[in-house]
Length: 139
Image (cartoon, rainbow, N blue to C red; front, side):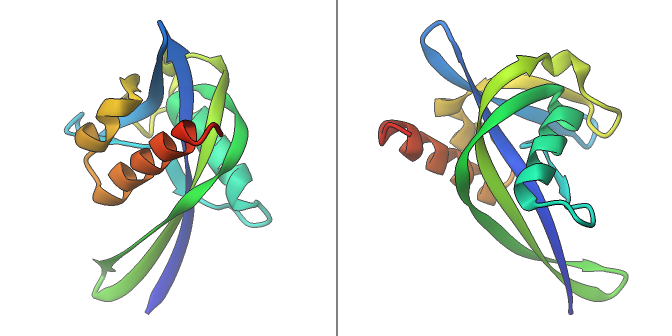
């Protein structure tokens, strides 16, 4: 069994009184996901999430808190891989979703209240729910 660790971010920004989350489109635009990627050697999970936000969504955020981990299994070259992705909540600081890198097809702002329905992956939909809970708790 192989273990892989990645980190991702939910960056929130208020527009016209509503919270929006930065999301990315991958797989020819068919998949709506949260910015995430591998943790580099010597990098913390929070630092990796900050970097992935900048690279994939084109924005800088201020770290608020860790939201949780998403765990899943997949197969690669006949091996079973257990993947753990740690997600962190951020507040938008600067940047533009138009400045995303080549790893994603596009980046966009999605209403946070719609994210649990619109995100393609179940674990990421759960993280959007966790972000909604954190906001309602005043964090």
